[in-house]
Image 1 (cartoon, helix red, strand yellow):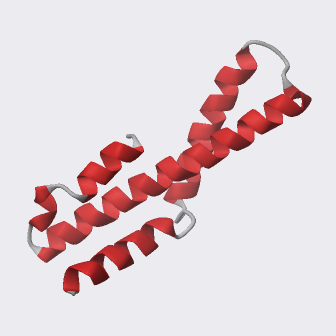
Image 2 (spheres, helix red, strand yellow):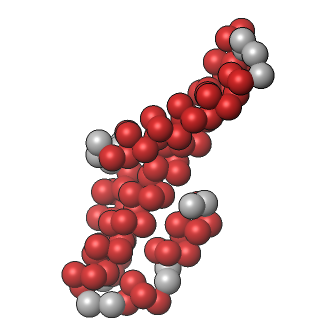
Length: 97
């Protein structure tokens, strides 16, 4: 899922559902957004490591990309960086105003 797709999920009319369903959808979208953000940060880190001399062959970039995806999913599943929860908190506060 891309950042644009995650943003469209957050602004979709289906989020105007009853509060419980809306909260669940909002939390899911926020976690997906956080996983995308983490994936982008780790991908930049992986590129930096490759530039600094760890290029060992053609398969390195494929495996490096797979490692980035797995690490991003693991970090997000373990609670992430707190970005998802902050998004949910702020969006819920905006809804109650």
